[in-house]
Length: 248
Image (cartoon, rainbow, N blue to C red; front, side, top):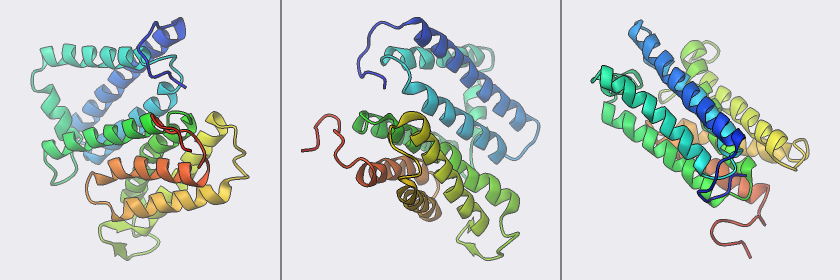
């Protein structure tokens, strides 16, 4: 797990930072091109949602210290500012491309900030268990995203009735991909046996699906990682030390 200090970076940190920064820049560029091509806004928005979330989940915990992800973020923003210098309305166009229907650019910006706040909280508080941080992010990147992707594509095909604006198919997709996210985090980042804790993971995934179902607008971007992290802590690792204070 990444140390919460700023220190020297090793070769792996530098390579991963440059790769992460460039992939993130390419993701934003691709989303922008898709939007320019006239595709519905939810397609580039979910592309960024899935790819950027996955990049954060699988890279942050592998750096040696905070200098690595800071370098990656710096590379990304350097590329973004270079592009902005050649196209001054780029930032507003990107916000517009990422906005939901009938949603302002300010709400889109708030959605991103609150999502990062949820990620940061899970990272700092549960730093001793990287699987919690990875699961919390993937639950948003995969679980929440699956709800919209499958909900918009297949929603009301099986069951016509909606719950508010959400479809049964979308909610089931959130549950299944949230469960997948939890299992991936346990398999690759934990010493726990995934089959041994599968009942708990099913309960957590079901709760994530419920949170997504009742969330309004961008609130799920903040609530899902927080709820995921808290439930994993309480149901799987109740005696783990928390940051900055240990559990007695």
